[in-house]
Image (tube, rainbow, N blue to C red; front, side):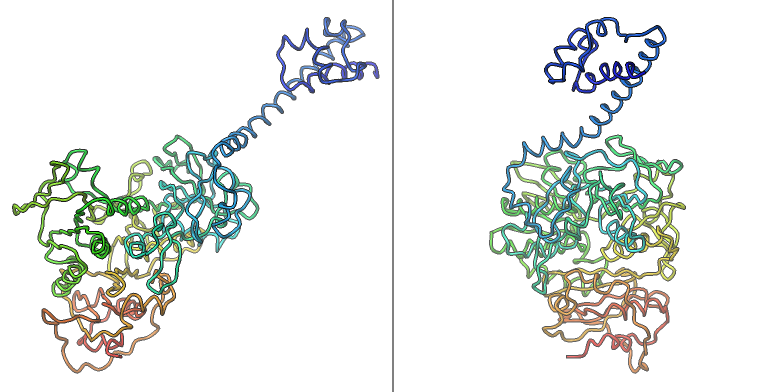
Length: 628
């Protein structure tokens, strides 16, 4: 028996020592290979053993020996294949990083917080800053995890709020965010507000800005250390949040709890959040135009749009913004202020009679239009675009009333279309009136599928079914969806707010149904130096005002006894600060706080109570607008 073991050892040892071999090599070149590896002579096979394939002994010994050799060879082959497969991605990435790494090593530490070792592979480095982050990018991305207990489709504010909420309630949760954008979650409001007022020439690289209160921050929600690698998500201790950037979910199988990406990768899930947001609408006249017109049109939404428009504004002579809503008016003011120093002409046109004409009452809309004009913008109200053509390297915008406008570039800011492409494959209902996925009070579309943010059409117990496209709603709905994904089963009762700033001196906050077609009552007072967006952020300590008060609500309100009826302001008045009430069936359903800040809990309480008020002039006193 001992002779048999020694013989097996002599046969098995050389193949295990060889890094690679063929059937031919295993026969004739065995002795040579053993000498290359410097194996002791007593371990080499004899010529008799090499040629016969057997060992000394009878027929039974040869049969047993062949079986042992076969099983051992199979085991060694499986082990070798498994090892090579597991190392393939790691080796490929290291070779890629060695060839592309031409930055000084010290540059890698500028982000501020020390990166986790798991983030070294398959990640894209973003601009330095406390919010710059590393995100998995499809160009260097290792295979996506085949399973994610919590799968969040969309990489915006709602998805990030949900991820943070899930981790708060389930510290060991493993959360995967799939985003079409290559960047990790970031806040969108600064793209049309503070970033344009930055004095940093490298603002498009750093994506850092000074808030109205002078404090500096990044647009990214979290630093790199917050995220884990997608390849480590299912294995890392205590779980984490991973971002798979540059990928799009194109199909949902709700029966099998799986999704398919645009690269045919399939990922299974246990619970899923749809937070796909929306895409900017375009004008039919531009859609019908040629490719050259489309290439010279910006649909403003993402970081890349900000970078592109910043560059274009420094290269062209004329930019025309089509749209008079929040985004169009904010960009007009931002570009108008910049234009004064670089010789750029900024034109803004829209079909309404004044800026934000769909939201503000006519008198306040007209006042806002004059404010935008004072910023250096050529405002053209009641302008309906009929066609757009390209002639002699100029874009020609023809209006329905016969007017023509020449420009070098167009920014279309005409609203958002909710992204509901997954509804068909998932069998989810889309609201025919408001758009978006219809969900219940808990933001559920199915038993294990939730929807939050711009894409959610929810039922408001006070105001009816709605769909809201604002930052505060994305934060709160995302947070609630995350809580319900971990078993909270809480209804969505929150009245979200939104705000718009026309520079650091004029801004407003709004809540509820603010529709200029509704009857309104406005109460105004003389403004002080404290009544500006800049002062508001100095007091709250944050540039994103909704972050400081999101769900706050006044505990109780004591309405004074009415003494006089409110009077509508007269045209030409200086609307320093005030409160505008939107009324339906004698009940306040919406409120705009014009240069009145940090009073949103009071407004939220008024709408929640849903009471009829005989004198809104007295109700306005709750906001202390007359205090100096």
